[in-house]
Image (cartoon, rainbow, N blue to C red):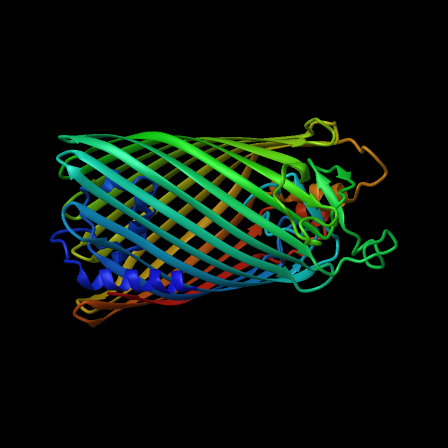
Length: 523
């Protein structure tokens, strides 16, 4: 807790001490500029010559989701309350600091077939090793996320940079069987580069460690029995295969992630281009504790080789290219991102694999901004994402693939503007279209629980075209010479474009609803 308080004080103190750059980009001017802020974190030294104004943003927000149309292992409703502070601090011409602190308190309603802290709202399937019960229940989660970064010019064109990232999560399910899940995720990267004129070459490498400990406190012989099918704890290995798992009271995951890569950047007065190539390999080990006494401690989870049950390996190749044109009255930003991810598991007791996942993801985002000083006359965003996903149980139980296209279009404009006050309106639409899909299932036993309630339902969701309008309103008010206030609200909905989902699942026919609102201070 002391570290979190120190981080906030760190951000606030530097925001007061740093000098404002002339003719630089003030990121809070418009939501499109936040795209560039996110990319600075990917490789800070590539942006060291880009002029961004100092700013600190402190925000309180709330997000409400009503998900009538969803994959099974995601809650039907969620409420999120958050506090965020972040900023850029130009200490000198040679040194720039980045920092952020984010806290979230999340409540979820009616989440079934899932005893993990993973959700399928933003991914096709969960990782292949997890416990679950059919019974739906409510959850509570708290997230803490701290990031820090810097770029520093050592001598002439030689530059160094670094980022650190710490996430802490605590989740628990509010009815039996009740797992308490604690997660600690540490990672860091270092960057080195040399700049010659308008060109820069850089290399980077990183290391991360993530631990998750599960304590299913309320499992006992009376509840955890086949006679109580709604509460009976089961273990999924692969995709649709149920096996016996010897530890239902304590188990844990430990993930080690290693990554490295390189980048190139070009810039002149109006043009900026950068590209990064990276490779990462994450190995997740699952440990189970059978309850024996070890080192005078009973019931604890130990990260010992003898307790390893399963392994899951994720390999990720990523290419990210970004172009930015900065004119007198306009900005154009374009990004292309490609990822090729392969995941495969290993069962130590059986000495073999039974699951493989592949995901190729190609995304592009194009933003155009026409401005008059800090007044936004017109802004557009076009985002497209292509997915080619497959998951296969190598023992012949399940084979699934989906090729799909997401398209997101937005327009925004300052509909009211004064020197000390403005209102920005954003409208748009998000859409999802399956291009091709297939699901094959061969029962390995008489127990088809996961297929009947999870796999089949999720595939019907993935093969359904969807469309939803979006609306956002942001009000800006200058409070003092160096302080601005922003009040914002966003509303979106999503509905299917056919009746097949309602006919083939228990979908109630109502659209998904998303609402967020908040208040921010910039200083």
